[in-house]
Length: 124
Figure (spheres, rainbow, N blue to C red):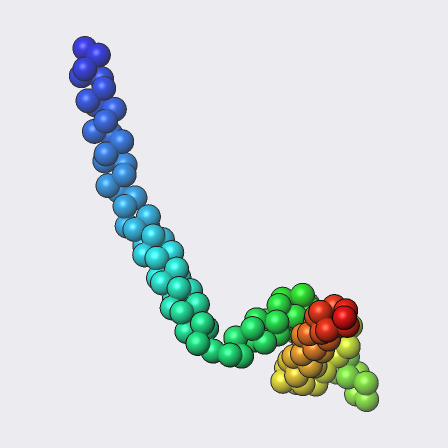
């Protein structure tokens, strides 16, 4: 009787796994594709002399808040208009707000490299 119950439990578990195999396999394929893309990017970056700078700018972007879309009353007419907010400042277009965000990220990257220069070149 014990063997029969064990076989039944095993067959039920196998049926459940067979039923949910597609979502699991889809996630595994997505994970594998992301790892492959990351490894390819790392291989390309070994031969790119500007990769370190790009990483510094990306790190600066990660430290900043994102641009958000808000609806505020127009200053002249009072009608609701769409604005793009970055660091508590409203911009008329998303491009202007993204430009301000990128400028701040570049400033952070420049400050990082200035700090490195000061640390390593300043000591003699």
